[in-house]
Picture 1: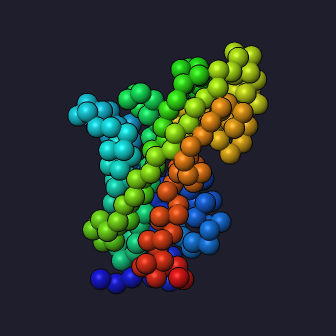
Picture 2: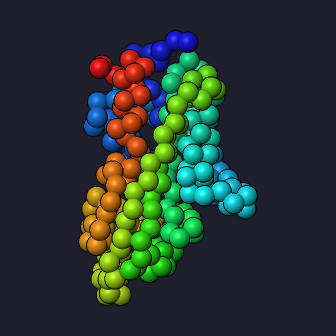
Length: 203
């Protein structure tokens, strides 16, 4: 089985954050936006009783498979993240009212962010990794919530829960336990290990 070409990997993801993480880590890549109906797949998986890890893995594989179909001979990476609060899975909010409702629901509670990456070559799944981080939101006031959403604007729609920890969203939290990259949406360090093992990156 051939290694990925020197041109780098294919990232089957529309996430600017995942792309930035990989590029900052020195990974050469091409981005392919996967045409995957995530909401429909999530609804189906939830109906089958899948947990957060199962949903994240299934969607990451679906994205990698899309990339693999469109870039034959290239190593394709798909990734996904799910927010799990006591068994309830959160999607990205569709509007600011939805973001406010999600943040109000998570306020004063613990939740998990589950991130998964899957690698495929020519339609064959070669590797995957799932990681989980635990986060506890503080019991912030309605006034702070309104001010927060007014400040970040549409950025609240970029991820499940209505926040980005790497910015002003840090002020929403009391405690965080887990890998920082996993929280951002990608188990980056295990993925880099895998890319080194495949000689995509120097060891």
